[in-house]
Structure formats: structure tokens, C-alpha cells
Image (cartoon, rainbow, N blue to C red):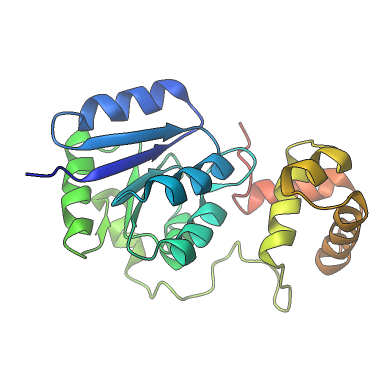
Length: 214
């Protein structure tokens, strides 16, 4: 019998190794990556049945990676495994295309349970936060951008990289766009969010889960 193929994404090597150990007896772990951009690339190349990913990852956070993967590989199931217990993050994860949401402090048995559930086209939410998600997932979150503010996917990518401390030239290289285009996006982001310094952009990105405060 063919075992389900799993792709793992987390920016901590020890976490990846731990998840691999939990899953290796029942599933085929076909890859492990440590940033969101590597995840999108690996997902397209490997076409896994299930992707287990964190929210806070460098270069491209898990939520943005999930949005891209959902468009590219609609049949791949996404399960978030994260330290973020705030239901806001779970809401955003499901809106980004997730089928499962677990916390890293959840029991190891929950992970295999979640994988089996999503492979049956079911949804899985860890019981630790399930009761807080009874309100409709489409409800506007307290941490959502101010009403009227809309950032494009590319602008959210630029915002994350700015918040990670990358220079304009480095951002241009990562995104394969010109320095002038990066500056244009950054200027538009500041205007749209009514923020005026890189420090304010970084604070905003942390508050909205684009980068980890760690």
C-alpha cells in the first residue's frame, strides 16, 4: 500500500527532526524545508499529499506560502503546526487554505490524527483552541488591518522582508524584481498603513504574524 507523502516546513531543525520521527513509521516524509520560499518551490516540485508547516518562517511566512500553494496545488492538504495559540491565527490559516491547525504543544498523536482527517477531506482543529473558533471563520479579526487597507500579496512579501531587516537590494534579489520596484512597494505600504519608519513597519508585521517576535 502506498503511504501518504508528507512535506515538512519549519525554521527550526530540531522541530523538523522531531516531526519526522513521529511520522516516519506511517508516512513517507519526502522533504523538509526551513523557509517559506523553499516550501513553495519544494511543494511544486514534489507535489505532496499533505504539507505540515509553521506560521513564522523566514523569507515568506507560512500564511503567505499557504495562499500561494493553495492556488498552485489545490489538491495538497495543508496542516499548520505552530506555537501561535491565538484563534486569530487559526482563522487566517483556514482562510489561506489550511485543512488543519495544531499547536506544537499538542499531543504527538494529534498530528497523525489530523493527517488522516485531512486525507479524508475533513478539517481538524486542536481541541485546545476549537471552542474559540465557534464564531464564523470569516469574521473580521481584531488584528486585521484597518478597514480600507488592502495590501497585495507582493506588498505583504516586501513588508515581511523589510521587517526581517533585509536591505532594498537584498529584497530585490529575493523577489527577483528591481530595486526601484521594491522602493515603490515600500512607499505604497507606508502610505497605505500610515506608517513612516522601518521600525513601525516591523512592529506592524510582528503584530500581524508576518514575522516572529522571537
